[in-house]
Length: 484
Ligand code: 5CA
Ligand code: ZN
Image (cartoon, rainbow, N blue to C red; front, top):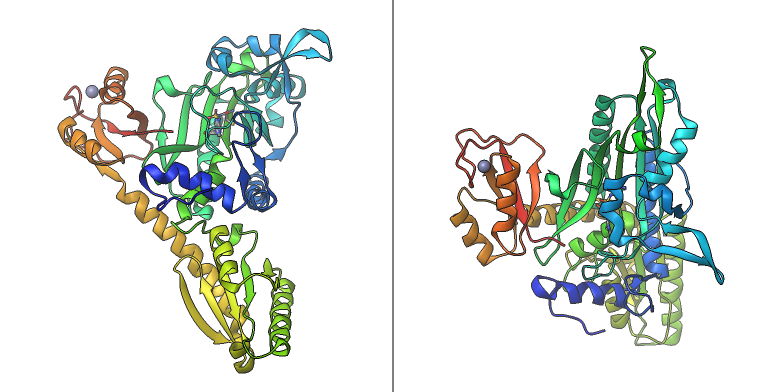
């Protein structure tokens, strides 16, 4: 695939396709079912490292992993009308078993509120068992009608982490929403993915939810990408499936729920946000290969070259003993510069270059992928320097990503001001808003292709500010952006 000259602007889409292909992460667009791609070994490993982190965060906060069937009966899914309305035109149906038409059509899960609530009605009856926090990491299917895109808009979402919780009161579910937001903050912070957190407008809530809170990041083309959502589901599903809970005071009430999820979009963001025009730059914690060792052959003799190759093997062994993901590329056929290029595309954070000179002087040359910088150190300092570099690289990637992100969030206090910015560049715009439904609708319809992400969750000072639509006192900031 041809390499675009930049990852920014209109070339981003090609850049993403190029990197997923040439770094052998995810093969997309060639498998003969639209919207579905193939994780290749290198990509699968990144995915696994990301999932491991997510599991750690969920397990350590009292979440329990479960595994539900993929299929849902038609009558189950039709029982909640608002929910099915939201998903109706996105559901894949299984209609046959072999040659026989099925008596009951079966849906491939587009999400699992329905099956999970159904089983909760059989499992949980008392406040003493609550809260319950379940999660699963599974494939989910949505027949997306907007343009599909590798990892960003899939029809089979292969890394759908969905959490579903059950509580005895509205307040406890409200508290759970905050815990979920906190968990996702820690998750995205760890990945170095910047975000803003917004309360979605009424018309953009998850079908059946009381309210939805979303994490958005920015892709290098300036479009906002929703990378995670947290929903307060109220009693919508527990009412339908009669999850009745005995409460502390002896009364009975339907349970209260939340759900929250992230997907393959997180991995797309990790790659897109840290990468550069030369390829991916994977943070050390998530890099399948953290250190690649490239031996440089001698120009003098074969014997000398053999020694360098042994030196490379020795270093690989030493690093692996410390549980570092190191790889010595000992291929004798290909040239060092071709190896450099290959691992730069793959985003390996540190490269070790050793040749006859390093061997003789007991030195090691290190190359940092993020800054494209070389340094030569004493061999004995290798481990210490590598661990330092891991921290430095992680912090640099994080800092760089947040600086870029913050530079793309702008305030405007009138519609004219906003329009000037919008015509010039693709950013997230914040404007004073009274918070009303009608002004929100007007804002979201004001400019073609620019949507309302919602309002800031944190209290931003709006004293003396006026809603850009109606002129009444502003209660919050509305955020608008081009959206995936
Ligand atoms: N049951 C709830 C919580 S898990 C739910 O399904 N919420 S969702 O519809 O908002 O999906 C959760 C997250 O999955 C979204 O925030 C988005 O980041 C991601 N997602 C949704 N659809 C797709 C898709 N077609 N391709 C890739 N990621 C998707
Ligand atoms: Zn208003």
